[in-house]
Amino acid sequence: MAEIIEKKAHSQLKIAQSNELTEAAYYLPLQAKRVLWLCLMQTYHESEHTGLFTVRVADYQRYFKVSQATASTDVRKGIEELGNRQVTFFPTEGDYEEIRRPWLAEAGLKRGRGQWNIEINSKVMPYLMGLTSQFTTYTLLDCGRINSVRVIRLYESLCQYRSSGIWITSADWLAARYELPESQRSNFAEMKRTFLTPALEKINKLTPLKVIMKEADGRLIFNILSAPLSLPTAQ
Image (cartoon, rainbow, N blue to C red; front, side, top):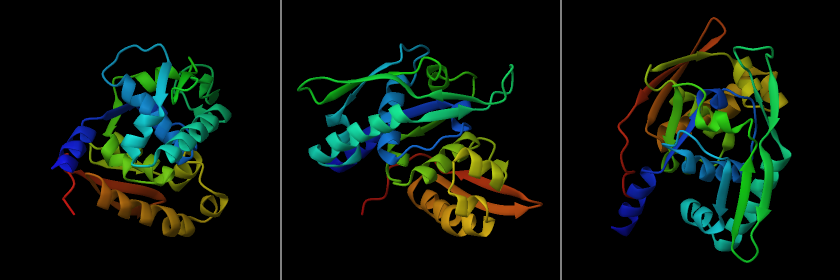
């Protein structure tokens, strides 16, 4: 019973990001992605945010079901990765067709408190809050059960088109945005075998989405059925 209540609570932990961020090019290891989730959870339903976030080891431990030692190591690694990496945006308006920005402006570990205070780059924050009226929203429970960051990114992209039920893209777009390895970039059969097919199997099994992919004239067509959000079936 306690497990069901906890899962229900988790299902209410919404994560929202602008579609510009969903369509940006970046790769983050799982620990960094989870740290970013803990920040995104704090912005849900907010129209403004200072960009200052508190990331607690205890929250990481509780949400992702790891030991305190693992949570402490993961949070440190995740913040280090965010600090060392950048995200590339592709604006549809303005002078630039491609803009690269670092994720973080600052990160500090509070002495003896098991928490980090981090500041998201002020030029990235608008993309976390949403630059348009269109948002990609999902729950921590849905994505938290997937342990591959590239599968998570595919899930985010599919969520963006959940209402329309169809997403049409190309292998080249996926390779560039998800920063896929060269073996998959240069060989679609390899991308399909080692990424797309197993990724869709995981998404269909572990999330509310049911997705079928077809290939037509060099395009990838994803048909998306969105099941009602519900608690996972008890094992």
